[in-house]
Length: 393
Ligand SMILES: Cc1ncc(C[n+]2csc(CCOP(=O)(O)OP(=O)(O)O)c2C)c(N)n1
Image (cartoon, rainbow, N blue to C red):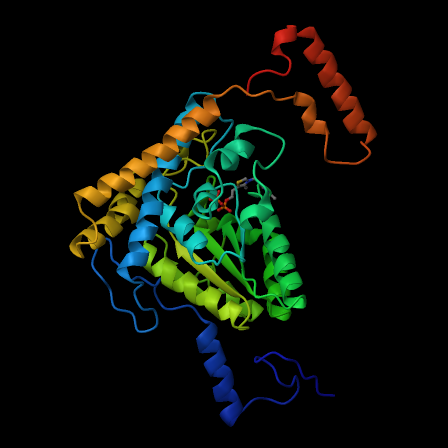
């Protein structure tokens, strides 16, 4: 019996490949393998690096994206400060990863969908979500803070890799409906060890769905380094095993990220199916305010990434091109400051949070355990001062 499939890998499961057939398969393999080194278009010194496959985005596009980088860095700093002031419960900073954040949002069209994680607030903002609404979840409210359908941005997922399956579901639905939608799903290096990651990539490849999986390899999953996560040649190589192309890119190079992600999105929209893009970057700060990164990595290691900063290299490159001067810098800094001020004002305002919201909106009929826990909480709260119940963030 001969089993034919739609896959370019195996036309027949019995006949050994040879001649032109074998050449065709090797060409497919070569196409799916990531490049030997992460794609780089602007080096850490701010100089253009030629690449035959990926043209450099034009200066205007890079300047607009640079603006988002600066705003993103300011948002990271402001959110960290709001956590220290007790105005937010937690903030997983993307300091150092802002180029990945901005490129993930800017490579999509208005009708496309973004599926972010808890670390991807800057991507959510670059897609147009209101900053205060975006930080509401991390402030500790019961809901996501924003309407996912307003900007086609899913809720920032905390359970690792679950959003990848949701993203694939949306891509499948879009394909069945004949819509022109592309879905970009983000995750970290640690999340690639989750079963959901495997299921999402396999389903997307088998059903040839318009989805781009974007892994920000920031070298750590809290304290677990990449070397304990995977021994594959790169995370992008995993794509070949599912039957989709993988690519790796310098995750601190905004230009390369825009080019690589842009190509993957265009390909998905043109019916080329899914792709996996791995960005090599680094988490410059602790996992969250609840983590002490000095316990598992050295200052020397962190220092090596400082000169690779995504903002500095784009600033140098755009200044050399004369697209960035003091006046433009001032204008961009003013915009970043306005966003930071709005965040401070918005999150400093007292809110009414009802602790019992924890138990609402999950099940239409509560389980007996939840009813018990809610009763216990009510009892504990009633023992506290009346003013403590339901006030303050
Ligand atoms: C299913 C699941 N298991 C464990 C956790 C606990 N957890 C939260 S963040 C994290 C590390 C994730 O690392 P990575 O995917 O590399 O993303 P990063 O935080 O570096 O952006 C873990 C294990 C979780 N949130 N969800």
